[in-house]
Image (tube, rainbow, N blue to C red; front, side, top):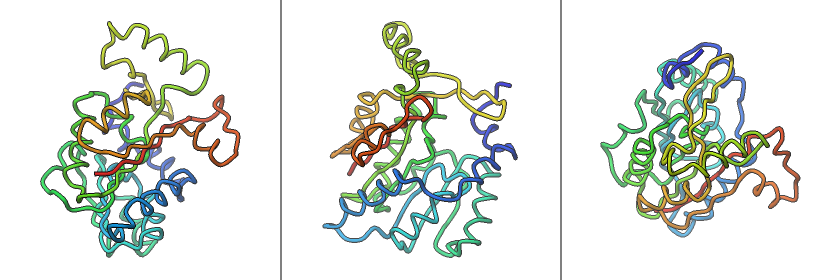
Length: 246
């Protein structure tokens, strides 16, 4: 069943899948520590903006890692925010966390406000139009304080054999597909949702184009190599993780 982005994330059994994951992943914790290292010479990370918070899975780990005094978490789906608010109360971090139902493209009314901006949960995978993805990166840059850190994850064109070759063929035909090369249907639980998968060089260029510097990007394969662990691309997503600075 084909379905749109916002409609997909409002569905109960989709929310149940997301809510079944209660903890941050090891590569997210790696990015949190990288953010702390990068910002340490400018102070502590105390104000944090989370785009695409979903049910709030990573918010608890962010609160434990940074001990912030303010978190603003937003999502496009109202039902996701309802579940997120429930979880925030369970974790006893609702007093420091403001939640908003808003499209990330429209969060552009503040400036120089956050020490850390996150775009986790591969949120950008569900933003198919290049102009919209760039708008979100521009908003992230605008709301970040000077020297603030940006971290996030996206789906990768390199991974399983079939996925990798699908995108390699589309890249060969880039003169035809242009900025739609990374487009591919995604989703789960029987729902098919339009998606976008990044090539590492294109992700770097998009982040750099809005002003961020000191950009680091790792595939999960590369991240686990750093840890001396073999990553099975045949069964894993091989997402791209990124860290950058304003």
